[in-house]
Image 1 (spheres, rainbow, N blue to C red):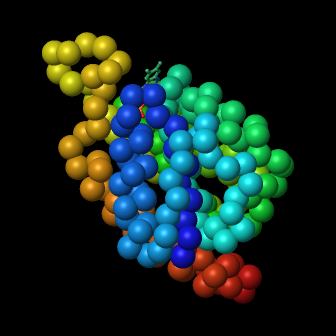
Image 2 (cartoon, rainbow, N blue to C red):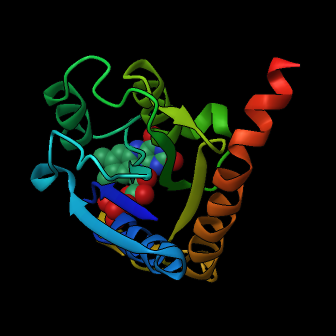
Length: 168
Ligand SMILES: Cc1cc2nc3c(=O)[nH]c(=O)nc-3n(C[C@H](O)[C@H](O)[C@H](O)COP(=O)(O)O)c2cc1C
């Protein structure tokens, strides 16, 4: 299986999550990992699984990720299996927003088949050290990202059977 992971990251947290996801995917095949501003706008034809993620800022995705989607043709991702992830604060969803939800919308609009609901990995302010660079991943989130990637592969394997069931 060939997977492609594309991420945006301001302060490095989402990049760490993307790298953990890539590690999880490597248990099932080869993986290419790109920052959004260096990612290919045409998917390699052999791509089986596309994962895109970024930080949640102002309730939604950041401009490098929005720009990546605007560089893609409409329906560029037609029928490719995909999943979306983000990093965000552990606040109620209505308060935090979610880049993953916005990324999933773009993926669906460009023809991708989502294999899993958008997933969030949580960051927190390090106590006593104000400032944006002191927002760090919560303990355990890197391991959870790796496990999530492996769970996505299982969902991807179930997709043809789910499609068949949906047609019954
Ligand atoms: C300008 C700015 C706006 C942010 N807005 C939100 C927000 O609306 N909701 C949220 O949950 N987190 C918000 N955050 C926290 C980010 O989600 C957090 O910094 C990000 O997950 C870190 O990822 P990165 O290190 O990959 O940039 C914001 C952070 C910044 C710097």
